[in-house]
Amino acid sequence: MLKFWLLRFHRWIAVILSIPFAVVIVTGLILSFEPMAMGVNSPAVTPSSVGAALAKHDPDGRARSIVVRGHDGTLSIGGAQRGQQMTIDLARNERVAAPGALATMFGSARRMHEHFIYDLRWVVTVSTIAMLMMILLGVLMGWPRIRNTVSGWHKAAGWFVLPLLILSPLTGLALAFGITFTGPPARAAGPPVALSEALRIVGAQYDLGQVTWIRPLGGTLAARVNDNGEMRVFAVGRDGLKPFERNWPRLLHEGNWSGMIAPMLNVITSAALVILLSTGLWLWGRRQFRKRQPRPARVQIVGSTENA
Image (spheres, rainbow, N blue to C red):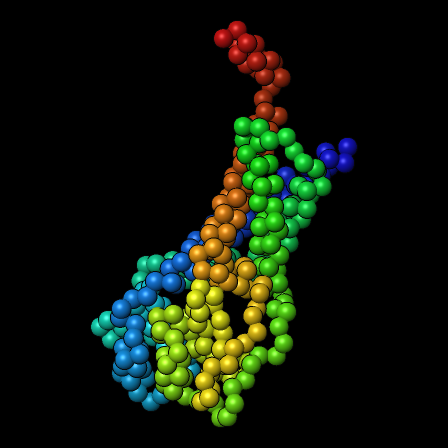
């Protein structure tokens, strides 16, 4: 009897939140490939090209942040004009309306993954909590019989990658509630440095194509850098780079902690969630269709199948 009710709760949570689940899962699958793209660097991203872009498009030095897209060969400058972010094609040093198609796709996927639509962040949080509840209900129903059926695929997808399925929404909730397991942010010694000087300091140690952004963070100017497959954040000062403590919930959730291994695990997790949602809705829909069939018709169909 307990298993009967656990199964009903499991089904109805999935049905009621199917649209938010689909948005979060599909956008998560897209974002699983972003760390792989970030490892590719365009030859247009160099210290000289970034410096030239800042000199031309921010001659007064008003910019407070930059976003470098090494795979796209573009630079976004924030704060040079109030309420506006400029995107620069570094190969031509000219403004463009938006980054390339790949960068735009990742940006749109991230906004929907974090905010759903119309900044409904709470919908994502509720859906993530519900996803964890569904996983718990599935575990409480016990080890299933795995067969080559739609139901068998559903159960196999849930059990064979169970640790990954638990880790993904759990780390997502940690990000939503600001849980980082880190201390106060690192601070560079001495007075703050200008953005142009920060570029020189970071560029002396790292390829600028591996820099994600440079912006104020926790009262200091910080840079996020792809450090041998791991996304690290450093405080930038005249004495060099000082690393922040690792934000493991973010590293694990975004797949930025170990080169190609981490994003591939995220791809597997997202693919399993796609299978779980699609097969679960298929099983629910088939069950509802059978319930609505008139009983004589069901008997007739069964009899015709047997005679065939």
